[in-house]
Image (cartoon, rainbow, N blue to C red; front, side, top):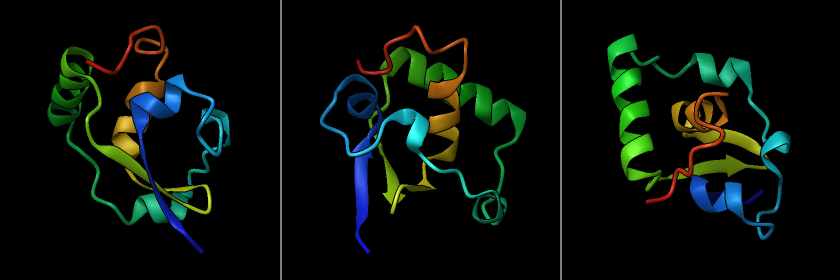
Length: 87
């Protein structure tokens, strides 16, 4: 089973990705093992992504999101969907 690293901005804007954004699987049990960001840190991350784009890859394993839950949530948010997340 292969781990994939995908730059979120590239993933969102190209057909080269193995899965579409809608096909990324969020495993709630796995996600619950990761510490949540406090609201202020989350907003700072959101602002940083909107200003600078998403520079760190999200990590998928067999289509399951392993790393990048917050970046993925921000990119999927209605407020940011129309905003290009690449610089």
